Figure: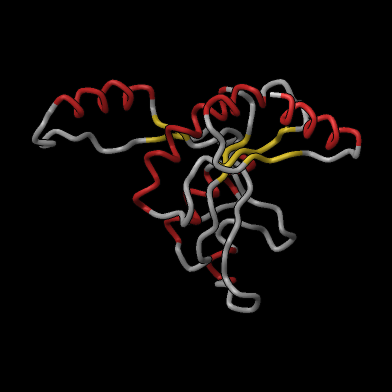
Length: 164
């Protein structure tokens, strides 16, 4: 991918890191060649509940390749999206108008100095969810669809700063 190589080299020469948005799997893999690719968006536009499963499973791919996952923006009052975005261990972006942010909600995820309180590794599905998900796909009625379960790794220092 000459374009990707050129972009990575040009950014590196300027001392810039890169982030990819809505990349295809081939771009995830290509990105492993670039030490300055730090984050990759693993959700579609308008982050919400209907995109959580894809977000979690694609976060597994990103984290396995050494790239921090992140999701599209959402409103700061959306506590569930804020929690999931924070547990991604990547950056957290909100889409509120300036001055309309829910500061109280944001302070659950961000310290007053602006540091995001996040886990040491991205939130990803437990291994058992991959086989449970494939078994559920075989059930045409969907009666046995498993609950989605995911887990991050947190140090005691990181965990001590956050109270949801």
